[in-house]
Length: 458
Image (cartoon, rainbow, N blue to C red; front, side, top):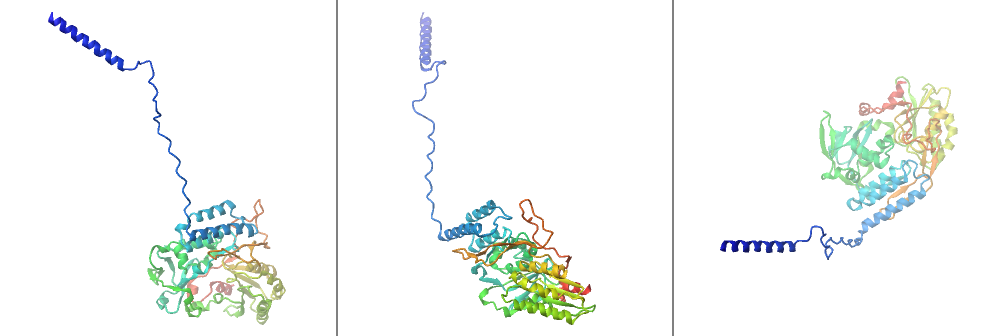
């Protein structure tokens, strides 16, 4: 009996506990009540707008210069987007504006020069302000052929004497080919012949070399090939431009006999074993007085008449960077006097420095004297934007001067090709010579001009 009562008691306890559990569970068919509070996380409040930090005055000044340049370029250039689009021009300026804090003043200057050079008009150019030119290296370099050579040094730095006319292959370990590309970007990315002649000035500027990447070490060293073609690293001092004396410049002795390097405007007769030639060096049209050029041309005519057996006339335009092209109108009649019955052939010598008004000179000598062009390609094509009688703009803070092409010079060549918009193609940027004659370094080391040596053999 007791066992039976115990079993009943345990069974009743089990039923009571089961009922309690069922009362604590929600029916399976009924959804759970929604929470009385929203448990989803609140969306993050938008951040407080950052207060524009006040730009340093230096950056504000450069920003004003950039915007001034943007406006003036579009307003003053005859056809501002002839080769480069407006979108690309604006993008480049905007990119520069965003990097002002990380660039030095010199670096920003070269960036601006590169933007302007990239527009494809060599008469539209940003000129280095004085602070870029404050320091220079105590040596000078020059291209002969396609290679760069040490040709001179400032007096007092005689340690460079053994390396005169030796090839410079790098500066601070950076290959000259790379530095030449950097120079092209700020001088003329469309014409390598123009850049080759003018880059040599930049290679002497610490400001340019630093912008080009040579500032990773203290000071500057030239890697120069010695007489055994071994590379030597030679430290090159930096001097103040104010302390330089042009009369204190020492050059290789053999270079003193290379006539065209002397520059100027003059004429002479050159002797040769197989007959000589009348030689006229015509380097500029910068003087306002037409008399100076009339005298040059008349002196040349006198030499032609004094040597009726020579049969050759050489007109050297390798240093002719242009000038006042309207003066040529007064010289055409005198040019006709050079065409004598005994003049068999006229040669016009060109290089990457032959530009601007010198292009008109080539056209004149070709038309009037049936001249043959020899040497290297020119720094400009037959048609181009010119710059005349317009004051350059000056960026208000940096004082960078910018010239703008304000007229179109239409060349006389019939070989020009225009696209569907009536514009020259970008590759039409140089006049190719009829005969290519490069300066051979072995000729130069012997004091011989390779171009004139070629003429003497004809």
